[in-house]
Length: 294
Length: 252
Image (cartoon, rainbow over all chains, first blue to last red; front, top):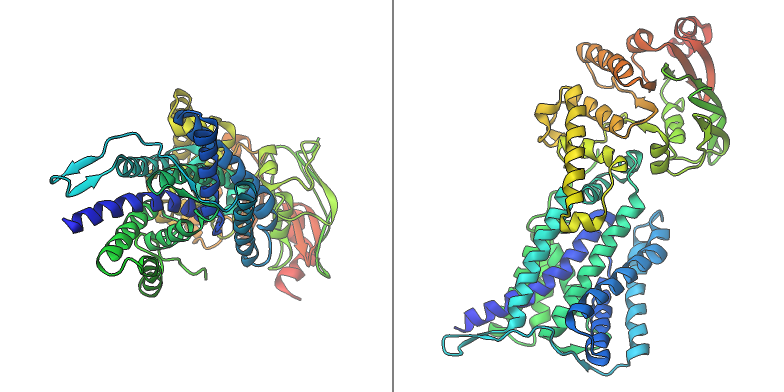
C-alpha cells in the first residue's frame, strides 16, 4: 500500500519534472545549449498565474493562456538579447554562464517585485480526489491532471516535431545548422520558436507544480529546474520521449527514496541518479551515441 | 544580362588572401566549371556566393540584384542553392523529409495551424508531399522515400542532395565536387544526371570538380583558380590547353 501510494505520488511529481524536462531537451536538441534559466521561467509563469488568479480574480481559462503568453514573450526576449548574440562565441561556456546569469536575474527581479514572502497558490484543479482502498490511497485531482497534461504535451510535441514543417526545420537545424540555412531555413527563427515553445510549456509546468505544491517564492523554479535537467540527462538529452521517461522515473525515484530511505535525502538521491547515469550511460536511456566526426 | 555577375571578389583570413579579385560572369542556362588544385580557394568562392563568408571586397549580382553580404538563408531564397563536397544531408531524417526541408520557403502555414492541425496544415502538407515525391521520382529515389537518408548508397545520397537543392527552386545551382569519391561508372551516371537537371529544370549550374573527364565532358566554360587568383578563364577546350593551367595541374 505504501509502495503504491509512493508510486502514484512519484508519477505525479515526475509528470511535472517531465514537462519541465521537455523544455530543456527541446532547447538543447535544437540550439545545443543548456538553458539553466528554464526553471526560473516556470517561476515567472507561476507568478503570472498567481497575480491573475488570486489578485485580479480572473478565471482559470484566461489565466493559464495569458501566463503562457507571458512566458513565451519572456523566452523570446531572453533568447534574442541574452543568447543569440553569444551563439557565435568561441566558447559554448559563454552562453551557459549567461544562462545562469539570466536565472539569477529572474529570481532577483521576482524578489524585487513580489518580495521574499511565500505566496500560497490556490490550485487551478477542481476535481474531487479519488479514494481507493478505503482511503488507503488518495489520488488527488492535481495528480490526475499532471499525468494527463504531461502525456498530452509529450504526444503533441512528438507529433509537432515529426509531422510539421516547423518541426522538420527544427530537426534540420539540430542536425546541421549550416546546411539548413543553405537550404533556405531561417535558423534563428527556428531556434526562437523552440524557445517560445519551451517557455510556454514552462508556464504550464509552473501552474501545475504550484497547484500540487502550493508554496510560491522567487526560488520556486530553481530546484525543480535543476531536477528536470537531471531528468533530461537521465532520459537522454535532446530526446523528447527520453525527457518524458526520465522525468517520470526521476519523480518515482525521488518519492520512493523519500519514503523508504530518508525524507531528508530526497534531493541527494536525485543527484546521485545524475552521477550514476553519467558514469554508466552518459547518453541517457534513449540518447544516441554521438559519433565523433573524423 | 548575366545571371551571375561577380566583380572583384576578395576575402582575407587574417593575413591570408584566400580569394583575390575573383571575377565571374555566368549566363542563364550555362554549365560552368570552377577548377584548380587543392587549396586554390574554390570552396571559399562557393561560401562567398552563398553568404557563409562575407567578402572583404567586391560585389555579387544575381539576376542584376546585389546580394553581397546577405544572410545565407536569404541568399537561398533569392535563388542560389548548393550541394556539398562532403555530403551534408540531414542523416537522421527520411529521404522525403530532406527534400521537404528544401521546399519550406515556398509553402506556408502558421505554427498554430501546425500545433492544432487546422485544415491549412493538411492542405499544405499534402501539396508539399506531392511536390517532394515528384522531385524524388525525377531522380529515381521515390521508392526510397521513407528510408533514412543515411541508409542510401553513396551515389544516391549525391542525387538526393541535388534534389534537395532543387527543391528550393534556385536560379543557380552550385555543385561542390559532385563526383568526389565516385567510381567511373558512377561519374558517368552523374554526368547524365547533371545534363538532365540542366535540360529538365532549365538550370544554370556552376560546379567545382577535380575529375577532368567530367569537367571536359560537360562544362562549356571554365575558370581556373590557383592560390586564390584566376589563372585562366574561358571556353573549356581553350582553357585546358593553356600552358599555365597545365603547369599548375601537372607541374613542369
